[in-house]
Length: 532
Image 1 (cartoon, rainbow, N blue to C red):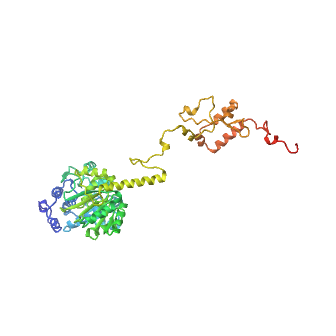
Image 2 (tube, rainbow, N blue to C red):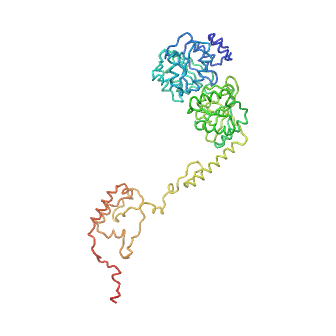
């Protein structure tokens, strides 16, 4: 089958021929006739199989007979990222150059004024990201009541990025009578529920099993410790015949760090992630597509729909935490019937993510042994690093790690209390009366260690402490016992209460002895020299 057999108009066929295409891909061959019929479509196919042309070509033919009106586009295409929206806009320019249709691109990071000028003149096709489209709608610069065709590209990525509330809000702005097209590489159950809200009796097109990788991509995994990943990546790039490559990282800060590291070691590399200014992102991507940059270190912002002709390699510096992202990452290579190679660096802690990927794609990823970075050496390096961390942790706080990797608790927190530990317990201010039950034992608390009576140094025969309290009258012992509370309870009182209790206890005592009382100091009993 060729494009001339799909029912497209002559201007569109001419543009396709000038682009160098003669035979449609399976998704294009099945989707284009259905879209031209005006039916809703739910299309699922492997990444890199030409889904963009599957809805762009028939859309140009359908809109060719109408006329654009100010601020009222006739077709709306939603994309999850700015790069993918810009790529769809380029495809529209390439295939629609022989048609008198106008197009506007609404993405973040660009001045509102230029976009508003295009909307005021009137556009046939509006390609936008959800956030910027809602901003223009709230400003009153665009109305969606005239939309005839609504396209959601990379629908599952919309779900992953949290755009579902925005899409549902945009759906309420659209007229109920319209044609809706869903295209994605994977179709999660949540997406099917969303499709039921937007699609009316859709034609389901599934070219290949969901979440499968193209046979034209040779996949490999390399077992390496986390601290040796950069060196292993550099060795791998030198060993492979890399014409151009994309290296994917999970975090944006790692993108910048890895790009600077590669540049420092003599590689022609650049970074691309969502925190960059839009003009810088666009310029970097254009240089990479033109071959001015050989290696692009990117986050998952470049994993969806990015089409770089002749991309030979994809490196996963980090194993993606979501297995669907693996399918999209390696799908940047091996496109349009060309062969590609994909390598994933797997550290010891990435095993669970790798298992999820193999379950999704239903195939094992062969292990490649990289000279100098064997699996045993990598594991040994991790063990040495863990032992070093253990020694450091012991030096800092006296704690180490057990065999399971958990921190050991201090021994005096985990062992059973011994008899000698009684002295470590806080002692109450006063002992309990001897002839009354001990309240602490009734409450299950530990009994304080008993101590012998203290004696006054000046009068060895006069006891102090517990023995002295036993010699006091009963009513005085009771008054002192009522004030004897656990130390933790007294600590909760404020200072004024403690001072008042001390003052009251002094008033309850017997009047102080004036003079020397019955006790005469020893120095008065010594004979004086005059007397002798």
